[in-house]
Length: 181
Ligand SMILES: [Ca+2]
Ligand SMILES: [Ca+2]
Picture 1: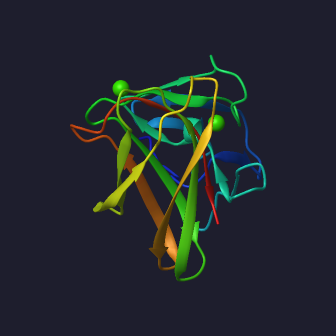
Picture 2 (picture 1 turned 45 degrees about the vertical axis):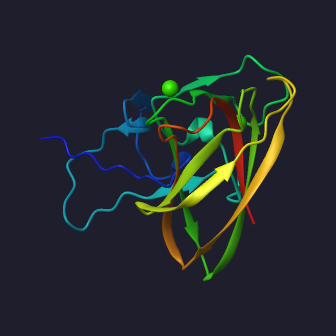
């Protein structure tokens, strides 16, 4: 029997001990790494090293958990390996998982571009609760990037922040990067 364990906080996974071959896969829930180990006894352990290029204050949406969006590289000057597009219809969402070490206000900066009739917004859900929204003022074209920020208070722990498109959220954005301070 196969046991599947998903590790939501890892953006890059290095398998430290042993094993063996692994493969990077993608399914409807996002990217994952699959590997096989010999039958484990209860005293055995699997060690994983999780990192995002040694900079945990920057998360790339193209590596996040995506729903109803795409990933593209067809505009210049993006950061990381690409950006999220097809992101402006109802139910489209990007979910970031990260760890906070202390209780305080955290500032989130989103690197994006937006060419729309109105001013696109995305509703912010933290651990399943609607905590408001963030605006993404339009940029002159899809090759121009801007930053929009929002401050959210967190206790220590594992967090999930979702940028969710509700029914009237005014159009598409390309989302390139999220920084946390
Ligand atoms: Ca979409
Ligand atoms: Ca990016």
